[in-house]
Length: 123
Image 1 (cartoon, helix red, strand yellow):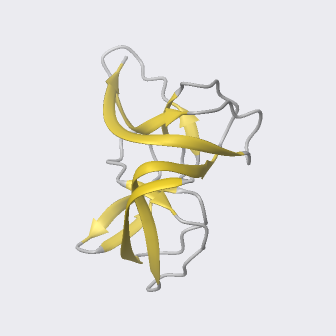
Image 2 (image 1 turned 180 degrees about the horizontal axis):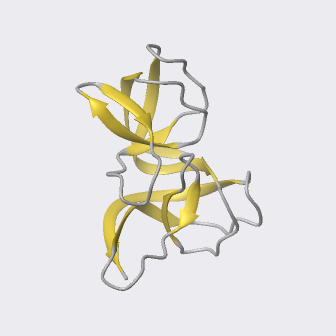
Image 3 (image 1 turned 135 degrees about the vertical axis):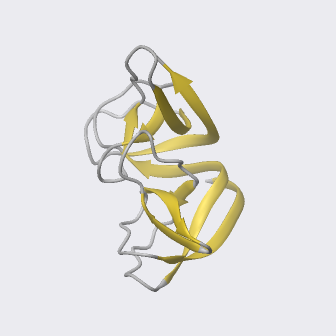
């Protein structure tokens, strides 16, 4: 992958590999759990326990675990378990997105490439 910015943080709870994360405190990240969370990056290919250090990819292209099928170019946000799903906000509702799918996900559990480009998307 093409990682442009990677930073090391403390896991505030266990985080599976290739999942979306959000800040929980200074220098601490936890698993993202909703499309409304402020998504700040993707956990690397390790699965830290609470209190362990982990690398978070914050810019570039990285792998992420899909939570459902979606098409190439989909705006990517988080499901309840930090997996990538296509953003689909209702009218007037905002979803926070981590970036864009560079390939389609056929099913939940697929590892797909994502171009990290954090943004908000309103339905």
